[in-house]
Length: 68
Image (cartoon, rainbow, N blue to C red; front, side, top):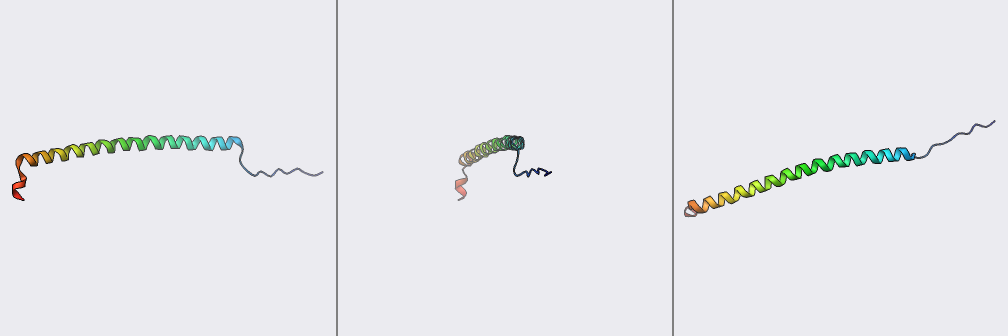
């Protein structure tokens, strides 16, 4: 009698779905983390812009141009 040997070349459908699910979960975590840091960067940019506007206004009021 001959024994039938199955050679396995490739992945099963369950393995592929599992890998895709893990990739989607990791991508979701990454997007959430990046959006949090982008939001914080936008807040910092607005804060710096307001600070620079205030400094320019104070400089115009005080008259720093007399020292130039």
